[in-house]
Image (cartoon, rainbow, N blue to C red; front, top):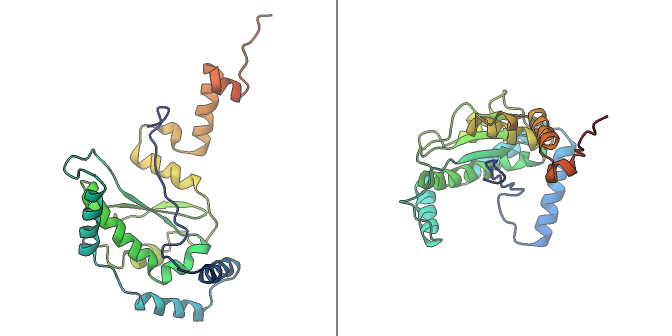
Length: 219
């Protein structure tokens, strides 16, 4: 909570897997840049689908077990946690397309669910995506449906707008709508701007100085 506004933490992951040398990173950067500048051909799609099928899936049981050990070693008291919610906010922009077809995003989902099972009482994750538009996926991620979740609920769902540009604001407002329904002034860019201007007009102080609030002189 900061300044009376609940904080939503979003960690943007540009590359899910680690490449151990500088040359590899340069190749990946060029590869991702090329993906944003051209449309995928049927041959590209087939190649990436094969890579996806060849990628070794991660075990949820082992992921959850490892997450529990790491959390406890980090001093987290798993038996006395405050109420917490865990959500997946997935980047579906054009530059991230390759990560999906190679299976890295699915593996990340499995690892995150392993953590959520320890700190979210519901033992599930709500899922959101962002590119030009933001979406909340219809089905939360659970122990029963996590396998091939990315393929079924993101890649194969035409309702999810994919491979566009990078716009963070819409998904942040969508998260506030979902988790803080009473804070309507944070549910859209327009309402947030109107709220800030109202504070500036009536409050003075820092906001008043920032937004040019001045007392009206009596004629």
